[in-house]
Amino acid sequence: MSYYPAFLKLSGIPVLVIGAGTVAERRVGPLLTAGANVTVVAPSHCGGMARYFDARSLSYQAKQFEPSDLEGHRLVIAATDNSQVNQSVAELCDTKGIFCNVVNDADRGSFICPAVITQGKFQVALASGGAAPVLTRWIKRRLQSVLPDKLNQLQEFSTAHRHHVKRTYSEPTQRRRFWERFFSVAIHSDPSTYSDTYQTLLKGAQPSVVTAQLTLPSENDDLTLRDLKLLHSADLVVGDLDDLKQVDELLRQDCLRQTSQVYLEKPANTLGMTLILKSTT
Ligand SMILES: C[C@@]1(CC(=O)O)C2=NC(=C\c3[nH]c(c(CCC(=O)O)c3CC(=O)O)Cc3[nH]c(c(CC(=O)O)c3CCC(=O)O)/C=C3\N/C(=C\2)[C@@H](CCC(=O)O)[C@]3(C)CC(=O)O)/[C@H]1CCC(=O)O
Ligand SMILES: NC(=O)c1ccc[n+]([C@@H]2O[C@H](COP(=O)([O-])OP(=O)(O)OC[C@H]3O[C@@H](n4cnc5c(N)ncnc54)[C@H](O)[C@@H]3O)[C@@H](O)[C@H]2O)c1
Image 1 (cartoon, rainbow, N blue to C red):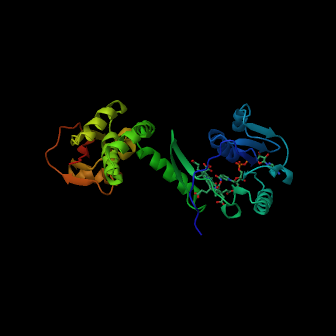
Image 2: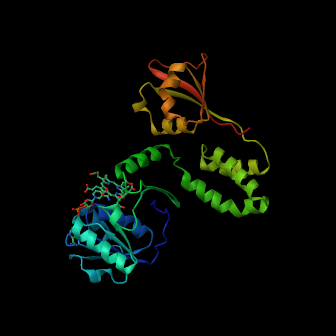
Image 3: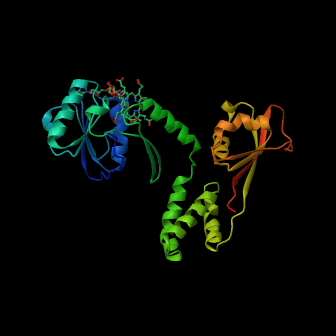
């Protein structure tokens, strides 16, 4: 059995969270952001949970869970530190056809909560089928360091121009190609240049190749987030054999590596290389 991934619309939907510790707190923020009407039931709460108590769509009941608390709820999170309570919540939910997440046992619940990276409307959700949550968290951190930080603006720009592109290109394949070319250039650019790139590509012109000269610290641990992102975005990297070897694991598998003796002057104890970020010809 594998899980079916989906994004839920919870605006105005009553959701019950049982328990008010650190794990319940991690659930409540995203539920409120999604517009759910959240009820939290727990005899005590952690410090972080208190910041949500002023929210109009949250009600906190300082008491132990009782089966009647489930009435009227469409989604339930069993997040107490008592596995027997969590299990009986799950069983009751099963009989009532309510979807239930059990934070201490994926198998007992009917859905699991993924690790999420959010940039505006853009969401990346990750899970390991309940098998390795800490691995999931670790992969999320890795992804965060390589994802461009302007996804939000890129999404807003493409949403605003979607209908125009649809009118310009009647064929879905043409539209997809147009957007792929646009994103491949825009992802490395400042949002102020999106309009120019868009107009240029609409006219059918080829965007120019974007290059970057990097001088990097000799230890990978000292690389900045910007360096990591640039290295990961590169389609072609030109540099000394030794320098290339050192950054090899930070490059994408499909990135071309090219060794060259001729290289820019670099300070001692640094690596140097030329990155071709996107060649669209
Ligand atoms: C991804 C993330 C999302 C989130 O929770 O928001 C998440 N766990 C995270 C972190 C984390 N989890 C644990 C530790 C402490 C390390 C340790 O002590 O072991 C840490 C680290 C930390 O807290 O920093 C321990 C743990 N987790 C579960 C169990 C029970 C079990 O495995 O049986 C135990 C043992 C408990 C015990 O021993 O008592 C179960 C689940 N954890 C899930 C999600 C679901 C499966 C997701 C998947 O498929 O990968 C599921 C099934 C529950 C669910 O669906 O709710 C979040 C990263 C948040 C982020 O960084 O964004
Ligand atoms: N899913 C995850 O990511 C993850 C991570 C770490 C731990 N866990 C598991 O989640 C459980 C909860 O972790 P936590 O750190 O939030 O615990 P916590 O001790 O901080 O909070 C437990 C909460 O449950 C409430 N509670 C206890 N009995 C209750 C009852 N009968 N009715 C209503 N509320 C009740 C307490 O008042 C408290 O608010 C842990 O026991 C652990 O097994 C899950």
